[in-house]
Length: 288
Image (cartoon, rainbow, N blue to C red):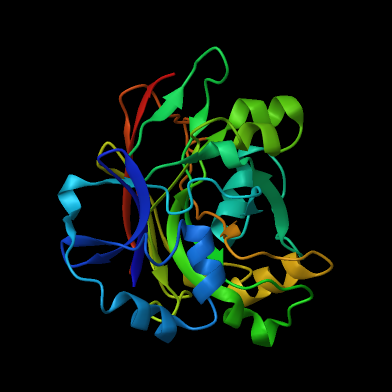
């Protein structure tokens, strides 16, 4: 299933993409988080609820929002989770590469969430080094703590595409990731959540990004250092994961700051991020 949050005639609802139509699921759940909480334990039950609903809205006539436009807490993100990205990161910093022994975790503020086709605001008085990072996003479906690796996939509701837009100068200035990762609108995601029963192998998906049609990143989730079960296990140790939690699993090599010379996003640029089996998000950089 492809589940969306959409705006139609000023009304925001959760929906199901069926062909070129969006089926309004407002009779099933008020929002995506509620839907996940109610049906994460049984995709079959969710399908049974949806099946009788007839009619639909042409997909072209709705505005797709981020699948979870108002997450109740920060997006959890992994840093340096692809070996080649770790290598380019350390090389650009003039340091010897050190692959992480444990996941490097940081977060993005909920206010950074942006729609799959919305503009990315750019304010050069705040940052002049806005960078792209395509990532596979994992959506947690069940509440859990101290989750074993062997059981971790049972806690996955689905997957989405995410662009972890990053202000590199702010990262250096503040000596940590949070501020440079949390500017408003710097977490476009979508265009939908593909449920885990349909995307059964998240560890062999092509992951690409393009700026103005030019490929910048091109890799595969098979190259992740920590796979999805391991990520969920580590995050849940001593910390409860909740339905609707968003986990960004890291970006491959090809980011702007590590290029020679470095490249950063400018007003008017079009950034596309794509994950095989899910879809493409496309965002224009505009003046804030």
